[in-house]
Image (tube, rainbow, N blue to C red):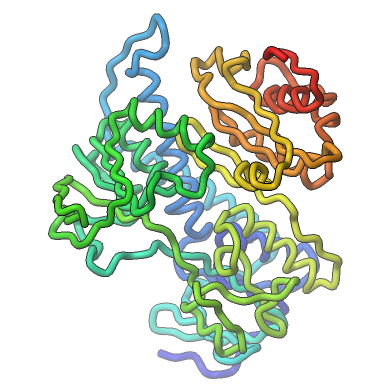
Amino acid sequence: MVVGAIGERTDVVVIGSGPGGYVAALRAADGGREVMLVERDSLGGTCLNVGCIPSKTLIEVASLRDRAISGTVPGLTASIDTDMGEIAAHLADVSQGLRNGVDHLLHAAGVTVIPGTAHFARRDRLSVAHDDQVRHIDFDHAIVATGSRPIGLPDIPLGDAVLDSTGALALQELPPSMVILGAGYIGVELGIAFAKLGTAVTLVEAADTILPALHTQLRRPVEQTLRRLGITVLTATRALRSHGSAVDLDTGSTLRPTVTVVAVGRRPNSDTCSLDVTGSAVDDHGHVIVDENLMAAPGVYAIGDLIAGPALAHRATSDAERAVHHLLGEPTIAPVAIPEVIFSDPEVMSVGVTLGHAEATGASIHRFPLAANARAQTMGAATGSTWIVSDPDGTVIGVHAVGPHVSELAGEAALAIELAATIEDLSLTMHPHPTVSESLAEAALLGRGMPLHIRR
């Protein structure tokens, strides 16, 4: 049946409950507004359910297995049975636990969660369809946080043996062989994880290199790991079509893996809720066009993967804070530094001015090799470096690292850039020993002409 056209009323309606949506709902509720949150699937969105969280859990499990059986730890030898069904259940349990936490927070904040698919009926009204019912919500402000979805390839349709990244994370059996189309961060993360679990992996990338957005020095240690794991890398190669799990390449060869995974990128879900009804517009890439306050139309905000910029969960969360501050009439500050992390082996962290831009513009680059870092040596993972980029006044404008656990450096690096810290500030900040974070201070000391644990 269809509920009548008389609408319910709320101050703020949020569409989508990912890291942008649920944070927007919580912050608007904190601001004293009545809030309704519409979600068509599971609370937490892509990141929590089929993206960041299960993939990083899989990476952690795979890395444990690899370290146990690789023989890289002196004095330890092991053999391990791998049960992909139990691993998949573990991934689901981790996501479920965090999803329960989000549900509890929303309930405690007084946010009304509405299941269903939302469409704008007009600029200030939503229609929400769920099962055979439709309800209408009138609102003062809407925050659209519908995220993104994997890009498909028209001649390689998804099926039982052709999966996207979501399907790969839900596998109940470990495939003997896997081809991954796309060697950006998603493809590389998945490829390394499955190779560590015992799958024979091939990466196919149209660009001339894996991780094409990365500087060569950041990419090189990851390439070394791919070789160690026996991952086949085919660059400057395109997949033309599939038949079953087999894939024809533009080189004239055909790959016949057990499973093919399509990981060629993501596209914004700007076409899923009739945003055009509000007067919003999208660019040529499908990103919603917003002003400096993230408004796509009067009273309508778009955040996260919907808008141009890095498609990152923490960026969506930051956008949510900014949008809510604006609708509450409070001042907003756009972040200068957006940290990016690749959970490859080794990990890669990058924030601020890139190494390539620094080289092109003559900015100062200070590199400290992790071979001279005690913590990296204790982990038997001393491949990699930390770089600090500074301007002529010694202000930190970029920080980059490749190595074990360097993702944990990203917060300090972003803070240093946001506060316009100098290399002297970083060098004089006490860093605990032994930690990888010491490499930041060491790189800063190098920038001051006072290297400590490497030769002058």
